Each structure stands twice: as structure tokens, then as C-alpha cells.
Image (tube, rainbow, N blue to C red; front, side):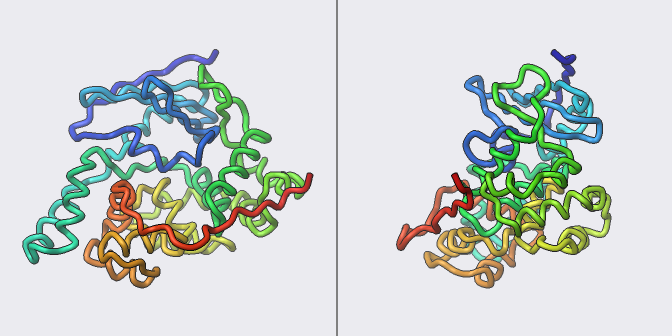
Length: 317
């Protein structure tokens, strides 16, 4: 068993560890994310120092991190950022206060109520871009269960066992050079067609450039531009990546199959499209992704009507 590293961090703000880290869970049975019966969140990551396993618990404002593997120290050093320590909510609170003053019957009142119900939500950043990009590409234009099936298959086939006493079945995402070498037949067995496979393989060739977007100091728009310069990375994928690796609170998932309808229903009682969603979110610019997260957590959904998007299966048996 690898050596255990530990860190205790006292947060001055309420942080819901499970809620903040939940966007990194890619469906049921994700080999890189687990919540155990004791309430601990386990994550694996391939850090600049190598593979690592992280276990996080929190109690009475104190976060306890435990980590194993060559990447243990890096995971503990960046734990506050992963939990949203850099996510300053003061600007969001001031924005809501001003919008509520401008109108006593406004969407801002609704959003303020949602925020009050979820005081522990933070937008954290993992600082691992390629790690966020691979599952995001697998989720392009398919239903979740199809993408998550491909993610599980590829991780179990090519990932390495998680260091330390991780729950059974947890693995660490393969490095970019492994993704570049995955043969076409294994992409097929995983259920990922050639388009998504090519996008991931090409991104693996440029993994260092992807990580360099974290150093961009000119704002979200420039990081978005650099990500979208890669073939196959569009506005939706860029947003999904920046939400997780960059901790971008203003990266709404434009192009999502469900989110515009959910946002429209929450604000107006009517489903809408991407353009309508962006119009509704415009007063919250700077925190549009945060507002979408709050709406998703509310459980508000339009009535289910019509057939669901069907899962495809490219595998042959």
C-alpha cells in the first residue's frame, strides 16, 4: 500500500463536499468517482506528479483530505481549489441584491431563494483539463447512459488501479499517450463512434496545450477560444470542460439537449431553446453556469412528453 498523506483545511464558508464534487461523477459506477456509505467522496486523478487517489470528508467546517500515490501531495495542495476556495460568492450576492432591489417580482428573487437553499454549493476547479475533456467528448450528442457506458469500458480497459485503499474497481484515467494508441476496435467495443474517438485522440496529441489554458489570464473567453481551436471541440464541450477544470461560473452548456428546456420552464413555465435560455440568463452574466446548477438542483423539470432520445449501440457481439 502506498504512503498516506493527509491535510486538514478549515473553510470559512459552508461547503457541501458531495454537492461541489458531484459534477465530476460520470454516471453510476464511475471508476474515477465514488461515494461510500460513510459519506466520504473518493476521486482518482492523473496529476502532474502522477496517479493519485483522494478521499474527502467534512465536518463542522473542517475538510479532511487523505491521498495516496505519486500524485497525493498535488491532490492535497489543490484540494481547496477543487472545493471552490477561489469561488468568491460576494459578487454573486451583490448582483442578486441589486436585481432584487430593481424588481420585487423578478427571476432574481427565484434564484436568490435557490441559492439560500444550497449555501454549500461551490464551483470548484480540478486544474486537469484533459481529464475533464475525455468524458465530455464521450457525452457529445448522445444520452448520458451511452456516454457513461463508454467511459466505464475504456477506463476499466486502459486505466490503472487506483493507489491506496480505494474502493474496489476504482482506476486512474490513462495518460494522453495511451488514449492516442487505443485501436479502432476498442473504441467500437466501448460504443464510441469514429468522430468522438478522433476528437479524443487529437486532443491527446495536444494535451499540453489544453493544460496551458489554465494559465490564460485574459478571462474565460480566451480559454474558450483556445479549447475550441481543436477540431471537434465546440461551445458545449468547451463549457463542460471549463466548468470542471477551470471552475468557470459563467460557462452555461449551450447546445445541451435538456438544459434550455429546464431553464425556460423554471423561469417562465415554458420550454425554450438556446437563444431563449441565454436571454433569460443574461441578467446573471458572470454566474450563468452557477444559476443553471442551482436550477438543476431544485428538481424543477418540464413535464415529460414525447419519446426520449434513444441510446445508440455501435458494438457488435
